Image (cartoon, rainbow, N blue to C red):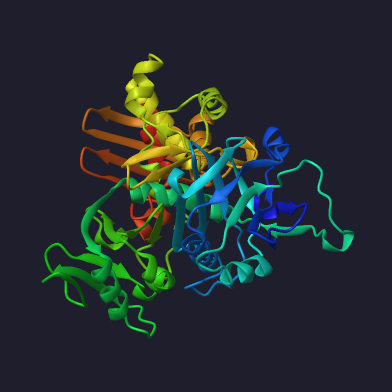
Length: 450
């Protein structure tokens, strides 16, 4: 079964309840992990900055309801990770070209983390409209899930909402963190400079590639590249953040650095008192964060599935994931830990935080077998090896030649210390811009196992 065929059901809708002395934001959740599904509430407490928090949640809702490619707009509810005294909301645009994450930090909340976990949360229209009405001095309480196990409400108010979650959404969670892990800070802006930047973004849609250059204490937007500039495709996507301008303290710009200029994505991290909001955009409007290709090149060797299951049960949501420390503490080979990091990333179990420059763990609210099925190219490469369809003609340290039988055809794969090539049609069309083809990947995994 594809994740696209999964119905996500909420027992009741998320809602903002107006009470005599405070507002209570109740976020309904869903997960198909049994031990998490039985948890009625992950967090309950007071939000110390109600108005900026409401605006940030509305910004996230704008992202998940937007589309910048010829893909119909449809509401995709975000996921939330509760743990380590933080709440992390994550979501994608319908086109998967924009990723947003809102981190509510410990100083922004005064409450109790009842459980750790990652779950889907319901972002419905009435709740969003209610958030829009939140005022500066109002007291706001938030609960992720319902505070009480038994929900007492009028039958007419109980709704069951079902949404479809496409597998490309989960693939986006894997793809975007690979880009972000390769990003470096380019420049940062203060509050006034941030306001000037958003005022300078053209109102009209523009699919052309533009460059952002920090010059004379401001950001210059130009179609001409300059040293130290950031490449941006689909600049209008950054306007999703403009409603947060009054609350921005500072803003940091990042870009991933690699040799392929066509695959450079960028990210902005906004700092607002006790919150951080990260927005990452793909290289172009028509290209989303939804492929497995960019992570396949990091596969070095096969990893026992038992490793993945074991760490999925040991780690907690929002817990820092340090590969080096993990290797030392558990007496593991560094190559095994690198492979574990890649495999956990491939199924969306690791995110990357630009602020701390480190990975964090999230236990996604989906069955592990479904997550492991999301990487068809890797699974096909494993099948080529299992079916003995790869013949090594010769293998030397910097030069490998192999024949790969796939279907009715046999392809030739050449791997050297500088490049890898294949005679298949997929490689002829994409080369390695979207990762390795299954034939090169299969040969690479085979020779690494020798």
